[in-house]
Amino acid sequence: MYYQIVEKAYDNAAYNAGSKARTDTAEVLRRLGFADAPMTPHDPGRAGAGRVGKLMGHLRAAADWKKALSHMGEGDVAVIQLPLINHTVYIERAFAAARRRGLKVIGLVHDLEELRCQLESGSGAEMSRYAREGAAQRRISDVLIVHTEQMRDYLTDELGADADSLVLLGIFDYLLDADAPVSEDDGSVAIAGNLKREKAGYIYRLPEKPDFSLYGAGLDENGTGANVHYRGRFSPDVPGMLTGSYGLVWDGPSAETCEGVYGEYLRYNAPHKTSLYLACGMPVIIWRQAALAALITGRGAGIAVDSLGEITAAIGEIDPERYAVMRRAAAELGRELRCGLRLTGAVNEALDRLGETYNN
Image 1 (spheres, rainbow, N blue to C red):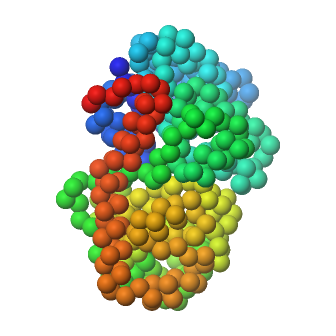
Image 2 (cartoon, helix red, strand yellow; image 1 turned 90 degrees about the horizontal axis):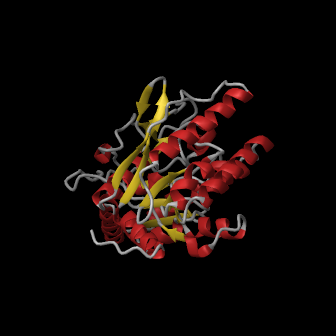
Image 3 (cartoon, rainbow, N blue to C red; image 1 turned 90 degrees about the vertical axis):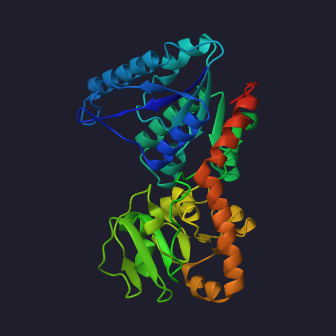
């Protein structure tokens, strides 16, 4: 039997939904025939608790995990999404019995928290916790699906992971209805996502041309240029309202390069906004040193730049015929993401690594 663990987050006695990346992952796995196995926590959280309270919270989370896995064993495969929402330092203990019974586990990485903490120069306590929990979550995974080659190399070279246990996703899917509208080509560059200064400080240093259309939360409109237009928030499941000739993948405080924890993280991860733009049929402008730059330029679905100051000249060199070709390439790659083909391929490769024959 194939299962996917569907975690619920305890939030003031109400369960909340996950991000689109997580919910899309769950939906693709359902389409592949993986049955939902809910992990329902009964702990209202450990924030603000003392040392004893935190310890008890970790133990309760471990018990909830053990219960979620209690019916799994020989011949079963379970997919878990990482990092765990209901994390516990006792996660290996929680999985031990099911793994002794023969359960095989595929882990799908959404974020590598110990890497982000290292880039952020986090406190020693934070780094220690993320390192311990990350290592434990990898040890319970027989196969791990990771974003990019760069993330794979970090795991093998810096953290000692077995390369044979790692499968590349490449880029995240972005599920949409087949008839969902594509973006309007209006000559602007779209920027979607978290617009807070600490993550996207570059927004206040954008070049005077072209126009930029911003979508998301957290924007401080003081200090943005006359060519920067805030369009409000959008539903991640109906992104056809985004307009733009290109979508920008950039992070950090600087317009000269991507730096800081969010900027440096682009060297390793596959940011979900890239998939959003492509699913909308938008070519992408991406930092040249980002992990996804090779995929974008290799597929002809966008351009890479070293600094935001290069954007005006770079797009000025693209004539209408070349842009039409680029937009078709972006739409073709976007169709793959809209249908969930990337995760489908990665899961099938993971099952093959486990010696499983998938017949759905």
